[in-house]
Image (tube, rainbow, N blue to C red; front, side, top):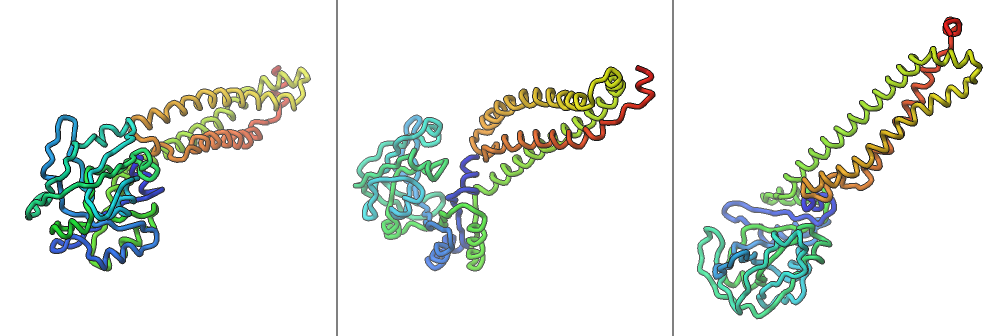
Amino acid sequence: MAHYIRQMEQGPQELSVYGSEDEPAPDAEAVAALAAVPGVEGVIWRYSIEDVSCEPGPWQSCGNVFVGTCPELALVASTTGCRDDEAASVEVVRVPQHLAGYLSEPEPRDAAMLLGHAGDTPGPSHEVALPGSITIDVTESQDRWTLPHSYAVFVPAELADELGFRRFSATVIAEGGREVREALREVADARGLYVSHEASWDYQRIVSARAAVWGLGAGSLAVALLVLALASIDEARESRRGRGRLVALGVPAAVLRRAQWLALAVPLGVSLAIALPLGLVARPLLQHLSQDTASVGTNPAMPLLFLGLAAAGAVVVSLLTLPLTRSGVRAEDLRQE
């Protein structure tokens, strides 16, 4: 989920653009228009291509084939050794432990590979030499992508076009933010194209969960402050006879008022001292359960904000309720004492 949050809020974000059934990929003019949208870093054509010669062993995968240029590959991964005039095998290095299962080690490559058309796309297969070698640094790639891209083979776009591989869509890499997405959709709609953002569906669920969590917290805080107000008023009125006894004994009114503040502050302070550590423990537990280090309170200041609101609310409630509880000691109260 952190991957989707970063795409939607911080960027970069990855959007797919599709054409019609007859011409699924945007043409060169449409790609140029998409690339001209402010905030767009680049547009990459996607090809119907796969490695048909790969036979993965246990705990290995064939990996993905990237078709494009070296600057386009640099948009989605931190690489070294890329050249636009040669196909290359790709080695993935510095893979963090928590991504080891996702970025599995691809099968070792020979000096050549057999490329075929992916899915049901008709067409012959072609043997392609792999003279080059590219390295993808996953740890460095995480500076831009929470869940980095991983490829096993790089094929220059010119070579894929020469071999007759078909383009089926385009991928737009852009800065984060809704404004860029809306501008891209306007350009695509004007040309009969469809823009899809995979992260948006999951992000909407995250936003709904956030709203529910913070709404529940705000509602609980409001109820707690209401209970505090009612309890303060009720306790003060119930203790009126006791105050009358103290007045009869000559205790100054200022001392009684300070005692009221103290009676309010002590249980409030104890409650906050208990609630704050519990909240700090609950937050990483929620993050672990959601496999997300960002969505549960993306802003680290949110728990502090709730703590500040609770303290400020308690002070406001006290300022509003203490005048209501300062009812004068009646002569009847003194006679009873």
